[in-house]
Length: 573
Image: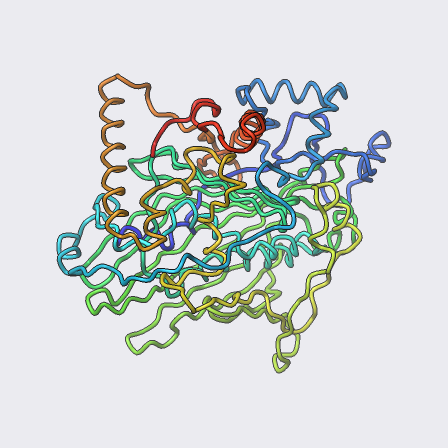
């Protein structure tokens, strides 16, 4: 139970990643702001309508992941092809809508409610569970299913994307300190969904996955449970002009009155920005950046890489059965290219409740000058006030351009940013505001966004990976209020996982290896992280072709068992 109060917030605890680092690929270069482009590259900064944009920003040391190939081989092969101009098919795929996948239709249908539960929850003696947990690492304690909510931790991880619009708005800002501020707003928004939620998500099984695709927001997300001891989940999100990725390992301890959750890992955002931003006066007069820009001349963009660490979280009021969550510490968001830095401090309340949910902060530019003060509550709203501006004015909302979501591909989004840039007002403005949360029938106090995560519509089901969290029988039973079934299924799955682990230890099965992620190193943060191999979506579409053919041949009556058409995927449920 308490290990998942850790889970309540641990989706906010992430591991590292890189974007277009100093690549050996001919099309990727480094250049300081304002540096003249060589004559033979002058046309590279202007995107024509037929230029192609890579589908992922996650290139390490010039590597591009190619389905079915090793990372090293993929990097060599892709670099050679790009240098010779031979990879036309690959490039054409790069310019396509990443979210145009089998099973996801337009117009988009998003579930906004949970199935109605007509019977009350089970009775349980709270003390009988917590008395054995005092002083222990809660990740090693198995508790009854009745303390769960009907989501997986992998789905909780995906909840970080509820306020992804902040990342898209950041790509429209010519000033780097403004972009850093909005990325910090996104980082802070990740905590809003934890308010009022004290039930734990289901701990993922080793090898469990979860995909989430939003055609309206133009991003796709994939998470996998990559390790079990300690439990580590990795998440990778590709938007049309950004990448967000993270992996998490948490440590938690129950002292009898409260639960303390200490995350490890680093969160990463990579923005794809138009080269025109480097030529603007805002960049040229801002001062020398910390790094040379990582540039793709051919595609007309450069990359900014941001990182931050997650906060310590306390779950209070356990002995009084009056739970409330408090996040404590500094959320430091750094722009590694420029040196801009935004710090948001989550204040700790006193015994009378003063400063409960309160946050304050400041944004510094690359010279170290404070440019914004930040204040608000992580449960409701965050306001930024420009230094030197009027403090008496009411904060105004920043409305993103109406056409912001109409770009379908990366190259369209980059071109849009170049000509539709935003200037932050020189007066107080709302950096972030919480989305409304419905109360009727909301047994688990989920956000409306979270209610969509476990939805498994019939048209999508045949195309999901068989390890997807939506297929967990215990979680599905919990969602419909079948608590005894959920508890029995949870025990069955845990026993099956233990049996599989014993067979691996005895040499009957091959050693465990994550299917969709590999561990590597990030130069900017100095941390290791789990990098997405880029294979999942290609494998998914290959399986979808086989599935679609089977459905057609059976006149829509008999889909094929997904385990028979996905390569190297285990039966974990």
